[in-house]
Length: 246
Ligand SMILES: [Ca+2]
Ligand SMILES: [Ca+2]
Ligand SMILES: [Ca+2]
Ligand SMILES: [Ca+2]
Image (cartoon, rainbow, N blue to C red; front, side, top):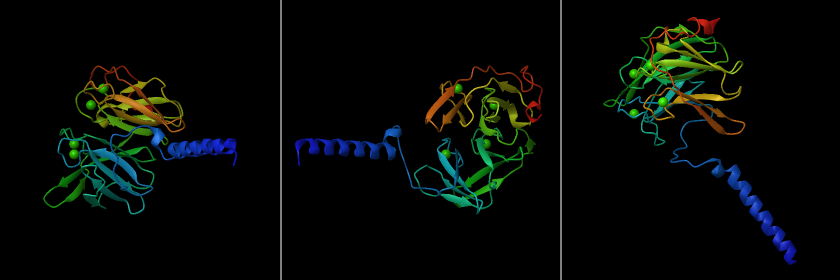
């Protein structure tokens, strides 16, 4: 074998190794931690504080089909509780917030394809290891089919009880403070159709009032910080309440 052949083979080895690195996800960005495998293909993930220990580090997955929920209450990749007595059906989307204002992010909003929302709370009992679902809230109709929901503290009142939807068709974001089914604020177009919305406190000002998107085509994440100063729901000078349903 000539020197040239050996050199070429080394180049190929390098290229194949690089391709393996890229396809294995190592080049996709550094993680601080990874756990699992936990959950199954097709599961819908959420995160919150379902054990009410003050940390929003609990994972849960909704499994369409059996319509069951599994919980990993310390995100270590082990199931700590599960129940079939929870919300959800095929095609539902979920957001997590503090809709009852008790200070714990353990309430779930269920956004159905019909535009109907309902809300409830997962309560974990550490004595029995069981988790219970209760839904004392009234439901609302808000948003349209195809909207992608988020939840946060968009009015900055300290409660993560506000809903938002990103509408890919017009790139508008609609916010409903206090989940009463009326649009309190409409943001200007931002992000692209195909982007997947998230919300959180990305500028670290202590309020979960910022939005973001993940763009699957490029795997880039974009963030938009909120500059909302608090004003009473419905008094924001935004579009007519209920506008989003029109
Ligand atoms: Ca927790
Ligand atoms: Ca709560
Ligand atoms: Ca709020
Ligand atoms: Ca913030």
